[in-house]
Image 1: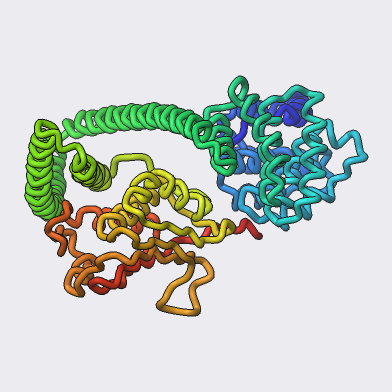
Image 2: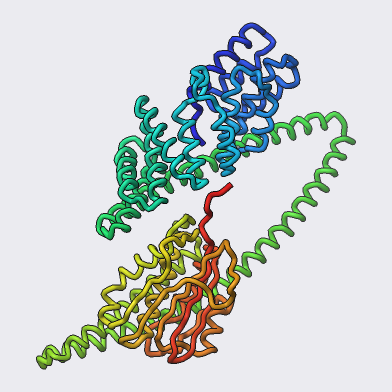
Length: 566
């Protein structure tokens, strides 16, 4: 939530004059002080007292304004609108009321309603701009047009906002306007114009922006560089973005710890109050023996009932925890059993392959070294992929790792994964084709979705013979009438395929791991279990079609990115 704007000082001064002339309006004076310090709970408490005392409509307008502002800042939009609607149109600061109401609709993504109020504010009346910032008005109108898809109008208002902001040297607002104007051009595929403003926003954010602004600016530059195929620069921006994500996460953790300490302090004070009240009651109970006996009896009954209920509750919690622990232990035991077997097999295979390599070098059989080195590389790569899946599985089970769902272009994520496997594809003479349109966007966490795509690619390469093909195409083979809020794609290869029994095991809801049909290949079924878990976490689904020696199709459904309409 943004800080309180300086334009509110005008209404504070006017309300202060009214409170100064009436000694009975002490709560109004306190309200002004609390509003300036952004102590919104105290504002609500004091204005509630004023509503019970004040009958003057002029003063009631100020009271409802402060209550509406408090609810707005706390994010309680329903009550904020109710308070603003109580204010009369003759109120001297009614322009600020309308601006705040439109801001609420903008926060609720009701862009048509917000726009209808913003455009009615008279930009020729100079008195209005003593109450509101004209650059903020133009920027908000531009945001509405951007989300409604009216890009020419959005561009016009963002440029006007930037012109006004530049005169005030408000760099934070300037960064926001640069980013939004860049998005206007980016949505129209005018990349050259978009890049100019993304770069301006990035450079300003490094010096003046908040952590969140620096994070968004770095991410935008990474996407731009990826689109321009400048992957080294994109990687640097991605690293910078991750650093800012980690920084923001650390700040959030510090804030959470502070909130916990605050709640513990309040609980301790509450316990002290309850203890003092109990001691006072006991002292009064000492007046008569009968009263003491009655209190003791009541205390025994109350505490007995309380401890009895607590014991029942603890027993239920312990039972639930035991059931969860049993399930986790069963999964852990099988996980380590399968993984340790496969890891031992892969290390043994690598050791044997190295021995062969050593013999060939000693015998100077250089013509066959390339095949032996390729075998070593395949074993090492498969072992690395298994360990990577194991790490991600462990993070998923412990709810560790960073997870944030955002709007992303599906085709771009697939291209990023394919780029990392380019060398392996060429080495095995496999072809890869991405047929997903660039306009298709999904709402998902990019890193967890990349884990799914990497496992698909790894399996397709691992279980395909040289000369086979891998293809990603849109659509689903199951239902022609797909949900308009979903995006489906098919990952298809012409490899070895799998048996029906294996396919059903991989699609089952059981958390237990299964061995694959291809015993010569390193694998435990962990990767596919991880894929299913990651897709479920992103609100997606997975289906599999496969026949032995005919290839495999992985059918994935994900959430479609919202279009931002009202």
